[in-house]
Length: 92
Figure 1: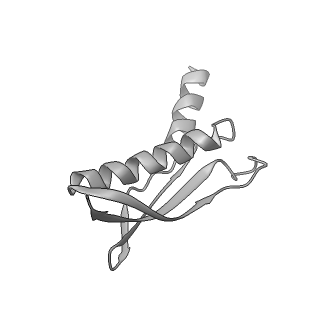
Figure 2 (figure 1 turned 90 degrees about the vertical axis):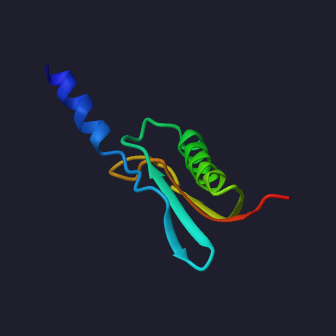
């Protein structure tokens, strides 16, 4: 029972607010892991996949403008985190 509650609490702490417009033709998406035990590369890959799916849903291609990632050590709330600023451009 305690283990189940702990797992539920940790999964509830993961942050994924979704894609947000930044103005003009730019968007931002971010993700943060629920613990420091998650892989930074996996969090970043998931963020890029979400941005790509967003652009694809508009019939466009992903154009990454900038990325930011959390720096280790992943403790005291500084968990793996990725933020991607992007544009959706016309598919060639």
